[in-house]
Image 1 (cartoon, helix red, strand yellow):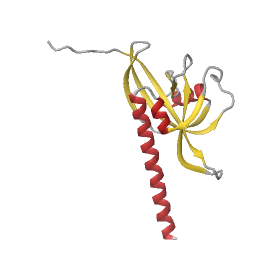
Image 2 (cartoon, rainbow, N blue to C red):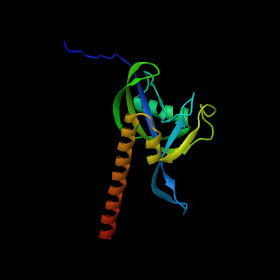
Image 3 (spheres, rainbow, N blue to C red):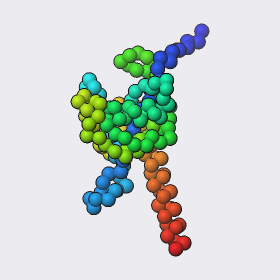
Image 4 (cartoon, one colour):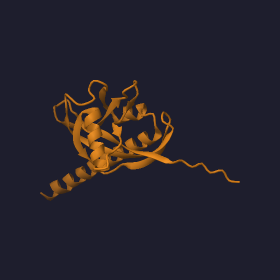
Length: 165
């Protein structure tokens, strides 16, 4: 007989990878990508903001709300990075997790979970090192590739526009 493992989907969650471009030494914006990680409520682990979503909100709205509540940042939720299935070791449940990039427009001094979480801006490479789950690393890689590709496309368009003038 063939053994088949079956998991019941017990939950869905969404995570956001808040990101921005590092300020350059000259006061301008550099090409260097930074991502925001937050500490877990109970420990020192670093992660991206996450949570479930309410019936009256979209998954994108939930991702934005969780980023505000847990990390104190506001911005634009961009196209989904992907959907991953995983088992929560702490709860023993099977989840579907949706990952979104959030281009940060504003960082608040006060936010709902300020007193229970730390937030730290780090490079994408550093974030890849502190992410403990493969699917978080994969989502981060997709974000870096997407952002790099977009910036290259913008450079090309600027060169073409300048050569026409």
